Image 1 (tube, rainbow, N blue to C red):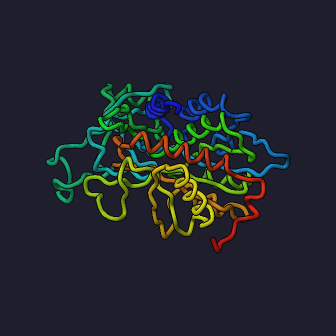
Image 2: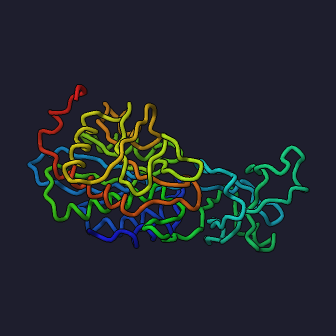
Image 3: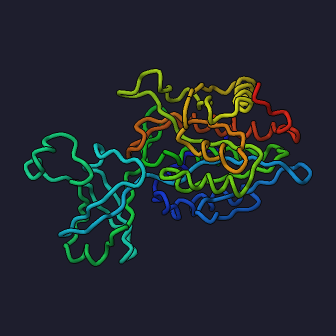
Length: 355
């Protein structure tokens, strides 16, 4: 099976917060180009790659959405050499103090290393006390003289996490932005697997933009490509400290197959049957409302697209030290490739809600 870890680690070593995905898009394009027939950027910045099927034209198509954007921050003002900032996507201020970051300075064209810092408690309002310090009071220190900071950084400059990926014991990987570059790795494994498998359908592999803020990349690509069915691959909550109840799933026990209103039951059934026949470990996840993934966008795009969601268990979501099990990525990629290869020309005609 192809080794995906070096590629995934490279994805965790570049920036690409929502609406500023270019650095990671370039890495993905370089990796995917030998695996597909065509590749392009959508108008909103999603990477759309076509791998043609072997069936007669016009062929049905499947879209696989894996968002490449990341949460991050944005500079709101420069004051006395320090940077005030706000969040892009869901950032928990509790994890920020002491976090290394990169400020993508537009005036100088540099990626400036910095640290998120907070004032001592005695310098904060009494209402803040010794509790969690909110974003309004946190700062970024670049270690530069105030006049140099003012000449290089502008309001609106994006800020990304700068923690480096780390392989831990137990074949797990830690790093920022595993949500959702772990799923980009899943799709890459699937494309590699499909080199040695015949598939009738066209495959649209899409690294979507702006999922963390709007689902915009998935909405627009699904509308433009009009696939017959869609699969969204994203992360889900793994069991860990403070997250051990029935709403989480074990790490390393296989990807999740999602059930719920965003999911077409026929697609869930087919994925489950295939996982069992191939003896690929999987877990069932119930999401009774909006999944919070690109799967919602694909489901309601255009006239509506039958959609499936696959989850990769992940600890410490939306922090700089997220954790995934590498074998969950490999299993999900293998299952996805097998499903694509199993699609028959008349699969869509067999879809029914009753199943």
